[in-house]
Length: 429
Image (cartoon, rainbow, N blue to C red; front, side, top):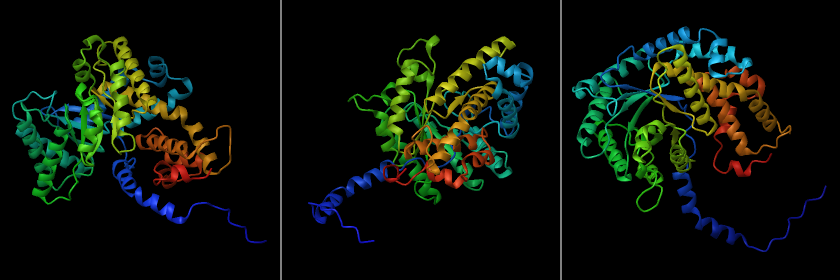
């Protein structure tokens, strides 16, 4: 077979070299601003517990209370299915997994709260106690995967108190053996990017004081004011906040009630599915896309307490809001009460169980270049893999069943879910 002739071209190699050289700053900027998903587990929820109420047994107490709520108001799969409208084919599997989750890992992310939910007077003592209890929980293996505090905001009236509480808490963790890998901090009521910059400088100083690696401590930014979405100059302030965090931002958390009140939404309509909430979260989502910063939905304040009829009403509301958020790619939310845990996990597990087989089949066909009735692209393979990985991480799916249907290992799924920059446009299908 003869050697194939090279096609004719009109440009010299110098043209390509010159263009590439001119775009080096852009390449560097893309890599810095948009590194992609960090590849770590994202919790399905965050639970807030007031600083004076947090105890060593809080996580287990929430799990036990959630199990008791199931025993009283949905003692079997059929009862839960009837209450939530779960398809019969899913009911037993979801119910079994929910109970197992509440026994094994009832809370995925816990924040000891020193902001809105905290009214006690001994904040120094409660912050030091929180550090001790969290350190002990990680040492004993009883911690949630993620734990930390929500401090007071950077506004003038509470700024010094918030800084001191953070210092007491982080110092307590260091004295107890060091910062745990699952440490998460939340900065609330952020209005200006300069407040994020102030948090960065504060953490830099703590890292220097304690000999920690620069950038070791990250934090979530809580979006609770209209100014955090739209700045006075008309720009998206939340995008500037991510930039101001200098790589330390780990999440954007939507504050349902503060944000709604800021816009003048009356109390009866303050909910995570209000149009104002959808607008804010859409801006957050676009601003965070590709940056490695994750977006979390807010909460409902309708508690599942009282008669079975009232509990079921509250459960249906929470279940519906959670499913709605998942469909919109908000994979995390807040839970305010132990009674919210059954419906949080029921909604999450049903979401992943319902689409599991189809997602696995599509990814297997893509990986094997086997074709099928859907022509998927690398970006879709990324979404399919991420979907399966999230399902595995929370307990909705088992690693073995995913491997059986896809023929892929966890490492394979990770590679599809987090391709190197450029792979999405250069992969051949």
